[in-house]
Image 1 (cartoon, helix red, strand yellow):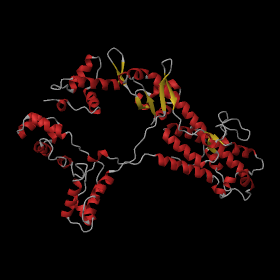
Image 2 (cartoon, rainbow, N blue to C red; image 1 turned 180 degrees about the horizontal axis):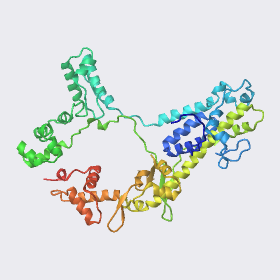
Image 3 (cartoon, rainbow, N blue to C red; image 1 turned 60 degrees about the horizontal axis):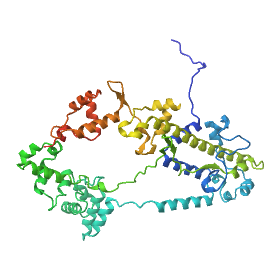
Image 4 (cartoon, rainbow, N blue to C red; image 1 turned 45 degrees about the horizontal axis):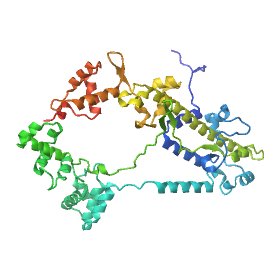
Length: 498
């Protein structure tokens, strides 16, 4: 075997994504609120970029730069748009010649050379005012569980050590309102506390509202909610202590045999038990609430066709200030200044073009989806059609990953409610007659079958499979079970009414 070193040419094909293409894909994937945040950040970082609605500027979104054609027609300059060139275009601190900046850009006169990329003081002040106004218009945060319990605790006359133990317990409740830590931890972490005082502190907290708070487990949570006014209180307590599993599996005859209580009384006690809350903290918010803003709106035109439009009323209309473009044409400006402005203008154009491309792609994809799902809009969920992303990609003429990015986390306002765009995609199966049926339609049909069954003899999963076969649809038993569990429908034994 001969070992040596040598050099030889090797031809390989490799795909390289331009920064501009990467930015376009990122912008396409952003939902409305995230896009607004991205634009706000760019407005702060790029002083050449302006919101035409607020600035009063008359610049078009694609101005000219040093004699170049508009950006939508401008070819990508490999010397400017390549990753290497982009990195080299980041401006370095200018020379000591400050005349042009001080004359042409008075808002930057007080800043150090390397700080000139920041916004002017006036712009920052306006930004601060807008943020303050937005904060004042925000809905006040609803009280948390800890706030509410601490307020109740303040009305009680407790000695300091006991009060600190109660505060410790309240601070360590989980999201459901349970206290999962051992009391020994309370004794260890609260100075001057013993185990008996820790038990007393827990009893104090458990007497607060909502009922069942600070329980160690589900049984204790439910037992804490029994009051003297509770109907069949003794039987309810017995059911909680010994028969929760039997209730879950609807084994009422076993409960009747073991408790000796009549069946009718057991059913009344179970009905009373259903009014209890197994998660006492469920009425309180545990974090920030997510608000959904539709990206698209679908409406019916005069010809009866469903037409999609983009809801960009809250999105800033971006442009490039003509003052900075004229500065680029000023031959008296030094080379570093001109290069800095050229880079920032190109950066602004990239963003504007990416946003416009996002609008066009979203509209094309959404309109193709709505055209395909017109029966759903006209007649309801039971008429939704099987649809795959590849079908929309082929129709629109884009890659399937573009469709995936376009529909990701996007919402559309329809006459059937506010829906995620992904809601319109789903597989299906064929009936014996060759007709395609979406899986959503099968789930709706399953719900109808169970709603119409005799509750004294509910349908088993095997019987549901046979019912589908009579309608020309072949489903496996495990598929029916999966659909039923997805819909939150109990088994036939649990649905049985005695």
